[in-house]
Each structure stands twice: as structure tokens, then as C-alpha cells.
Length: 191
Image (tube, rainbow, N blue to C red):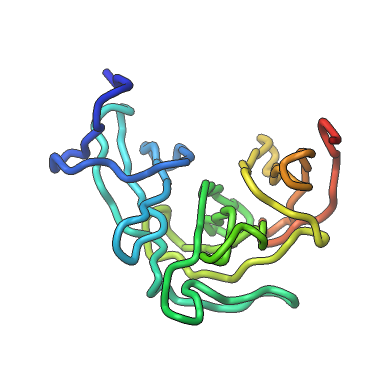
């Protein structure tokens, strides 16, 4: 049984580092993705078949992750100019059946202040492998802070994020490959 107020540990007895996380179910396993701010890590992955026993799988995104640009106006940056870490927060991962890729979206900040308010994208062929970082951008020029993903049964996916200094909540439909926003579907709770 999971209990709040205690340090959750993985099957090796180490504390779980998957903060601000997200879970998906794939091929008989639940995969838990979350922030790991220790050392050069950004995102860690654990898996479980019963939601109680969590096996550490990999630090799937680190300062040393492979970087590969994807689109115009995307910035490739996993460390600051002086070598410090940027901030990657609230990582979310979906499996795209069309591309057979696992696609991560996360909140990006530059490591110095919270003025970027951008979204970061990374992909992998497996749920717990080394993800390739594809950079960060602002959807249609808007801020993107606290965020989540949602996937319909037909594979249509949405990115939902706080915008305008957390005054609004934007709902974007994703492109078929989940690598970009296709359109801004709705603005909720406009401030």
C-alpha cells in the first residue's frame, strides 16, 4: 500500500525521485516519469506491474542527453552558458502508436530565472531508454508553465498548460507525431 508522509523507495531500497510526475501503462507495466534534480539528472523512470513495487529503470533525460533539433525556433539547451543546469519540470510522456515513439513534454526554464516559461520536447523508441532532447519553445509565443498531457482513445493528444503568468489555462491539440502543437483549442479560466 502506498502511504503519504513517508519516503517511497524503489525495489532496491533507494528513495524514488520522480517528482511532479506522470504515469502511463504500456505492455503490462506502469511507467512513472518524474523530476530528479540530483547531480546531472532531469527525468527518471520507474516501472511497476502492481503500482506498489517500483523498479528504477533509467535516468532518461540528463545534462548529457543527445540533442537533436526538430523545428524552427526551437532552442537546444540542457545547461546554461556557465555550465549550470536548466530547469525541466513536470515531465509527461505519451506513447504515439503512429510513430512508435515515446514523446515527453515538460516545462522548461533557463536555470537563472522563470522568464522563459517554455515547453521542452524529447523522444525515445522505448519507454525507459535514453531520450533525445529536441529543444524548447513557446507554443504560438505563449507562456507555458505547469502542464499535463491527455490522450484520446483514437490517439488524438492534447497539451494543457498554464499561460499568462498562470492566469489562463491553454488546451492545445498536438500534431499527429506529438512533436508540436497543431492548434490552440481552448482557453480556460481567462484571467
